[in-house]
Image (cartoon, rainbow, N blue to C red; front, side, top):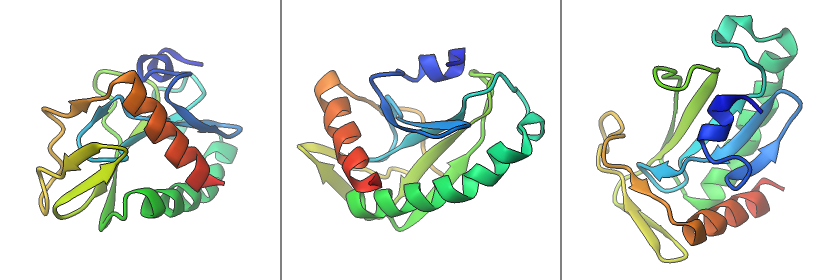
Length: 142
């Protein structure tokens, strides 16, 4: 796995792996259920990914959106491709909602709702919280 994937806590944060992508729980949660969808390649530009990686996104986004609606019951879903600190191709997948959401005692409010997501001050997960969120999302992804 590339350095970007490792920086987001792989393998402890891994929810699922496809041929070209992995989806990870984002260690710092601006909203409950925030994920990282990362390309497994060493590409640092979205356009440099092979056509099969782009095609696979159609399957992945449908699966992720279904799992996140079950676990988080989001109102909107933001896919942010920032790549300023971590250079390999990846998206931050941020569920958006009014109010707060709760999972296994972890309660998070969407501080930016209904505007842009607020990433600063995101809640760093404990190992126990990470495990609970990974387990819930794995179960929902099936």
